[in-house]
Image (cartoon, rainbow, N blue to C red; front, side):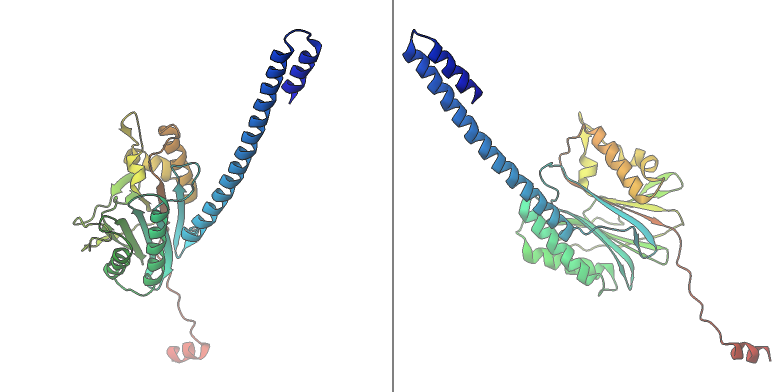
Length: 303
């Protein structure tokens, strides 16, 4: 608008080439109008993107509920790192539940991206949140989840997943084509590979549980393959080498924050895939409560 006013002033002041000056002023005015229209459109797009981001955040909270800080006897923290700045949710999933069979967790990764991946992730989590309280055996949970995935996807879609159960200090893991969890114990990092490989959910996996005895202070990291695939200049992020230094101190939430900071710095802020992280710490078995003995029974036992 300022350019139009200045151009008009020069056109009125000039006595020669009035037609050329008028043409210039009209051109400036036309450019001004186009710029105003583009600015209006961009402002509306920015408002729409902000609304979509808000809806994505609401969807993420509905699908991926916040974890911790305590689930049963375990200190637990979860974190979702999105590879896309405009979206906060994808096909990675996690959950931790305090069930009658102990604390049970799942972490998984849906093949593909976009709304279809979000839909399948919500189906898996919805099924898991139901059957985790009903099935005594993790293998039965795997069978239920496999049927839920098979009913909801095409022939080439699948979900990798790892299911974990902590009960009285005993850790049981079943793995369906997912990266092995990392056990952090006294400065060491131990990958908990399954006894035998099994395909992802959707391909009728037959799993063999791996059983470990936990020690007080042990931490377990569950993660999706975005962590293993993060790289810069062809060099992958050294998760196993740096896991203890990043995750072995402070609270479990502090550990995941340190891991995310180191990871983003390693890839210079450019991730190729979303990453879901769950870290828990085992403090020790829950003490068994002893029933109070009435005083008259104490007296009777003395006699």
